Image (cartoon, rainbow, N blue to C red; front, side, top):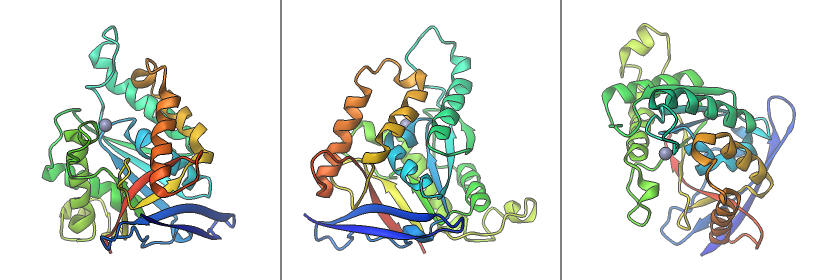
Length: 275
Ligand SMILES: [Zn+2]
C-alpha cells in the first residue's frame, strides 16, 4: 500500500492560518482518494447521519480538526435515535429529546452549533422521496463545499457498520446531492415556496472506518475532544468503561492502514468527485 502525506495550508476568509494534514492511500484501483476541493478552499461542511452519536463515533476527530481551522461544520441528523439507549428505566417517550440534547452538547464540544434534526423514526428509515427532499432542503440552506455521509452500501465484513438506517441515510443523501439539490426543478416547492436555490456539492466524503479507506485524517491531536463529544452521549456511552481504549484502538488501526507512525490515530473516508 502506497501512502502519501498531503500537507495543505492557506488563509481562510477570517484571516486565520488554515493547515490540516491528511493521508491518501492507493491500492492500485485507480481511485487513490484524491481530494477534489483543497482543504484551504473549504468554508462549509455538512455532515448527514442517521442517528445522534454517528458523527462522533465516525468522524468526530475530523470535525474537530476542521473547526479548529475555522471551517464551519453543520450536522443534519435524520432520525431521533428513539430506538437507542440501554437503561430500561428511562421512558421511551423521553429518548428522542434526551438524544437531541446530547447531540447538541457533543456538537458544541467540537465547535459545531448548527444541528438540524429531521425527526424520522429510528430503526425504520427508508429512501423515500420525502427524505430526499428534506436532505435537499438542508443542503440548499447550508450550501456546503463538502459533505460527509454514511456509505449507502452494506459492508459484508462489518455488520455493525451496516445498520439499515445508515445505508438508507447514505443513499438518500447521495440522491439529494445528485441530482436533487443541484436541479432547480427537483422538489420545486423548495425554490418556489421557500426560495432555496439549487446547489452543487463538489465533493463527498463517505465514512469508511476500516483499513480499506482511501483517505485518512490524522486526528491524534483531536482525540481528547472526540472522547468529550462521545461522553456527551450519556444514554449511549455511560456504560462503556472502555470507551477511550476502544476508540484509541480503532483510531490506531486506521492510522496503521494509512501508513502513519505508531502512536498516531486516524479516521478513514472514501472521497467522491460529485461535481
Ligand atoms: Zn447509527
